[in-house]
Length: 68
Image 1 (cartoon, rainbow, N blue to C red):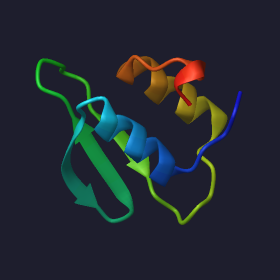
Image 2 (cartoon, rainbow, N blue to C red):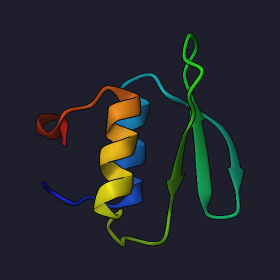
Image 3 (cartoon, helix red, strand yellow):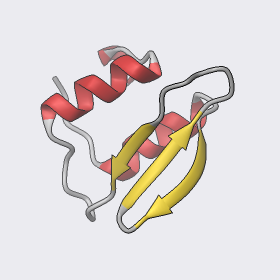
């Protein structure tokens, strides 16, 4: 699976109508109307997201590996 940074993942979420609800330190919290879940994206420079975290967030957002 391709690894991407938190900044790049944040751009993908915004394209899919996820909205930035708030920022807590380096963690950006996204919500989407009609969804109970929220997605927390750690923004640590251009470091790639850990694979398990990325897969879990992609599942919540409804993204596939092809979307990356």
